[in-house]
Figure 1 (cartoon, rainbow, N blue to C red):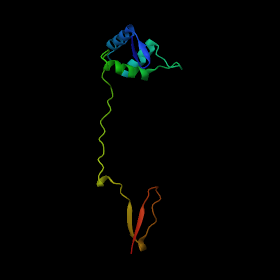
Figure 2: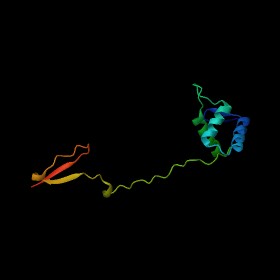
Figure 3: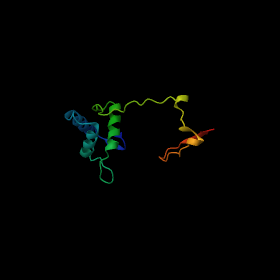
Figure 4: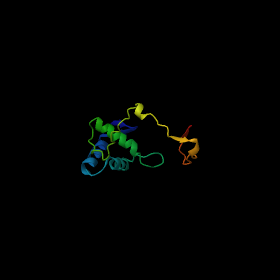
Length: 118
């Protein structure tokens, strides 16, 4: 017996998971976890499937070499981090007007600064 995510899995249950994966190569990881939950009656107290626990368990089973999951259908793309420099400092929106041509500040919700030049 092997324990994953609070559930003891028997050898027969592991074989059932392997067979499900082998017989359904078109299944996504999410669909596999839902089907495993249905077949093994892996449910929350409210009767809903514990598919997130099952997904985590299957990832750990794969890491331990017990099963081989299909490739993920979505891989989070690398997000390039911003290197903060003087060029990335916030810029203030400023306007320069002479007193004679002063216009009212915009009321579009953006903060503006009026600078008067004599």
